[in-house]
Image (cartoon, rainbow, N blue to C red):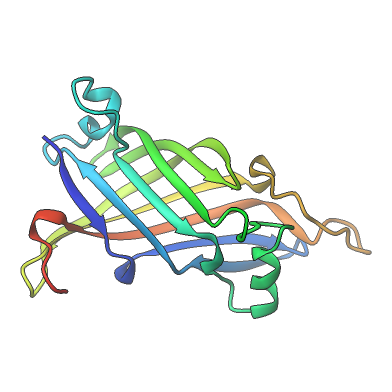
Length: 193
């Protein structure tokens, strides 16, 4: 039996980094997103749809991110990232992730595989995830924490804009490193937080 946990965006983070001018990194985050996690708390591996053929084909983890909420700390760069050169946020307002499989990798460690969609292009990615704890907050809400990491090639999602440097190389790297910290609240116990 699965339990619904809603992602608490106030206490979570979707962060990324990418090479800039070959020798340095730019870091950023998305500030607006929603999501839910359906877990079989007794066996996280059974939370994936394939493990429950009698259940509806619902994603175990589903997250929707507002493309226009990208924040790298520089307004001019953020405006460019929202433009058609990158996320084209006006035409494609959301990025999305839907999980398809969870595999246990050891104590509190899991491989979460699913479909990431950016600019209406969907690709399978795998997140290395770890549960970080579970407890009850002062208002009686049950909370669950986990972290996840992955890397992807932005060109796989149609994010191909770049500019050559006079010294060689390109202005923007292709590899994007993603780090996620999530705190989720058990839906049945959600109270004012």
